[in-house]
Length: 165
Image (cartoon, rainbow, N blue to C red; front, side, top):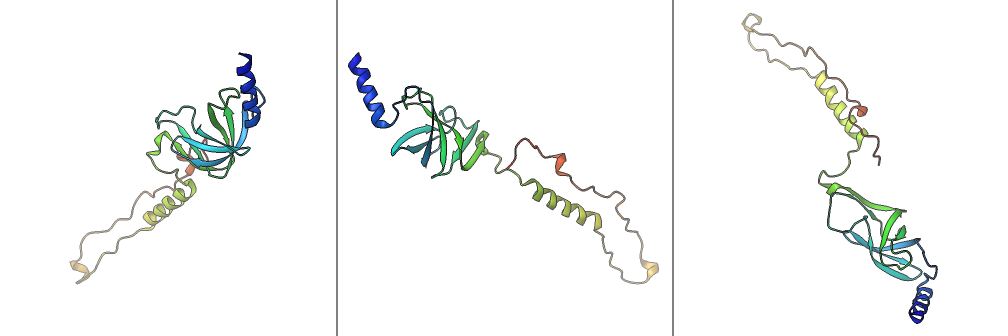
C-alpha cells in the first residue's frame, strides 16, 4: 500500500498538483463544447471540465460559456485528484443561456422603450385627412379627434433590475 501512495505522490508532483487537497486553481480555456470545456494549466490540458454543476443534457439551468483564451477559476471537486473539475468563475464570457434560451436574447430595455415611445408619439399626433370633392353642402359626416392620448412607456413598468447586461 505504501508503494501505491508513493507513486501517486510522484505523479502528482509531475503534474504540478503536489498539494494534497488542492481545491481551486486558475486555467486558460482552450475549447468549449455544449456542457464541458478543455482548460490548460501549467502546460497540462484538462478535458471534460463542467460548465454547469451537473452535466446531464438538461437545458433548464444556467449555462455560462467562457470565451476561448480567457481565464477561469476551477473547483476541483475531487479534492486534488483532478478528476471532477467545474468552472466557478469567469474572466470573459461568450454566452449565458438561461433555461434553454428558447425566448432568444435579452431585450435592450432602453432601446425598446425609445421605440415604443416613438410609436406612442406617432399615434398621439396622427390625424386623418378627409378628401373633399363637390360643394360644401354635399359633404356630410365629421372626423373626430382621439379623445384619450396614449401614455408614454416607462421601462420601470416592465424591467427586472435583478438581471443586467
